[in-house]
Amino acid sequence: MIQPTPLRHCPDLLRYSRRPTREVMVGGVGVGGHHPIRVQSMITSDTRDTPACVAEVLGLADAGCEIVRITAQTKIYAANLENIAREVRAAGCEVPLVADIHFKPDAALEAAKWVEKVRVNPGNYVDKKKFEIREYSDSQYAEELERIRDQFIPLVALCKDLGRAMRIGTNHGSLSDRIMNRYGDTPLGMCESALEFARLARENDYHNFVFSMKASNPKVMIQAYRLLVARLDAEGPDWNYPIHLGVTEAGDGEDGRIKSAIGIGSLLADGIGDTIRVSLTEDSVYEIPVAQALAAPYNLRGTAQQDNSNHELTASTIAPSYNPFSYMRRASSTISVMGYDLGGGGIVSVFTTQERWNAVAHKIAGMGDFKPEIILEKSNVLEIDPRDEVAVAALNREKSPKLITVLDGIDLEVIHAFRQLAFRVDSRHPILLKDTLHPPTGETDFITALLSASQMIGSLLCDGIGDAILIRGETAPGQSLRLAYNILQAAGTRIFKTDYVACPSCGRTLFNLQSTTQKIRAATGHLKGVRIAVMGCIVNGPGEMADADFGYVGGAPNKINLYVGKTAVKFNIPEAEAVERLTDLIREHGKWVDAPEPATIESPTLHG
Image (cartoon, one colour):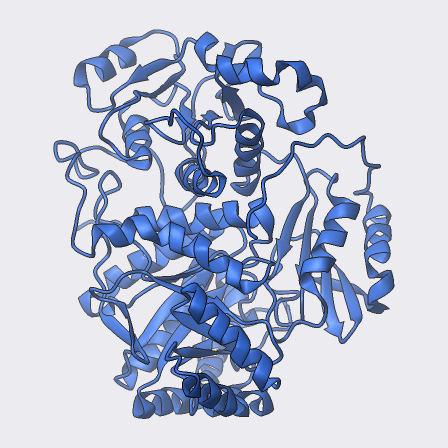
């Protein structure tokens, strides 16, 4: 019996190579093919306000943004894209414009006349989404697909005639009832939703499109993109469409940057991604340097370069220790180190060096949740080169489990090195993750260290690898500890504070997202394990806040709706009262505790 070929999202988990794709032209900007990874963003101004939109587009272009998205929630809004595009071009700016479409096919048809690209969300473009639980028969399922065909094909035909590009962009949590009931709110459901639209486009010989699979949870986002790429490869070589990457509703400050670096960085490390957007609840111009920093190392490689430093051992000769499409933590044994239990599925501990321990020893009692736990030099950790056959064999003969890590100074990339260690060493040995194998000797730039550590350690944690972590790329002792804990939180590995899902604002937003998010943080930031979504409008509301416990959603100008899960329970609350009403709602559901005395470590400024 012939066994089916296993799904694969990249040629080799132990070696970098960029996924080859066809070229898609967005105006004069090429995506995929031989082009560098492109940086995108989205303006926040009301689409009817032409001067404000033009100014924001020009500001993003000046900052290095290569593609700019603008919301077009109705046909009336979409019609003003003509004026925006005319004024942007009159200013000498050729940056391509993208219309962001939800729910309204007529808005998409209008927008396609004026902009270079149209983004549609298969979860709410035509399709029903009432959060109904029902069984769909095959005939009912086919009937809804036919209805989608009738509404979507005119847009495909128009984009084909006008040379417009398209993004088929699925979001976790905003899938249609039809998809939800058959596949669930899962990466598989996200892929199926997008592939249905792609098949309709291909039936009409339209190929100038890209895919995206966004989620606010980095684990879900990574799995969805991996599954999509594997499914595209299984469909055939001509399904080589470019991929747009993003962690949606990542939030602001360090948390937003860390989540984005984990999700986007993990996929870039596997060669996936042709255009990226970092979604921060801040002025959109601040997204650009973060996206540029994430893309830069891979753009320097070029599209054809491959990492050959690991040529002796590849994923074809070493069995992976995990399923890339489904999270499961590596099954290590429990050992005791400095009074802490490591491994065995328990808490992932935070290491520091003796020097840094000494630097913060006098204030450990006041460091709250950012305390160092284990000193590297006292841990008896065993450092090995995972390519060293003799060392690996000796370790695997050991009768008792040992704490292990990758040897400093070797010529392997961090992610590939720790994957190989996990693949080759018995799983009973707990692993200490490090963000760098070449620790710096002088001061470092905080944002550079944050993005690198988040990508390296966060992506490994999302693969289920790691029982303890050590940050050395950031040299300031207190900041390195805070960064370690924030990476654990963002990866969903160790929850020690409130988790926020905050959308990045756009022209649909019905209140000031930045100031409101800060007010909500100030009131609720001590609620460990509670997940709160802050959404600017109903489009990003009950669906895209996915698995949040509570939601704060713009329902009308200056009016807020409050949610428990995906159910709206309070309506049209005046904005001035809404944060207090949110805390009352949290109390009603038994999730409230009073805040302890604050313990803080000074945070660096992330932007000017």
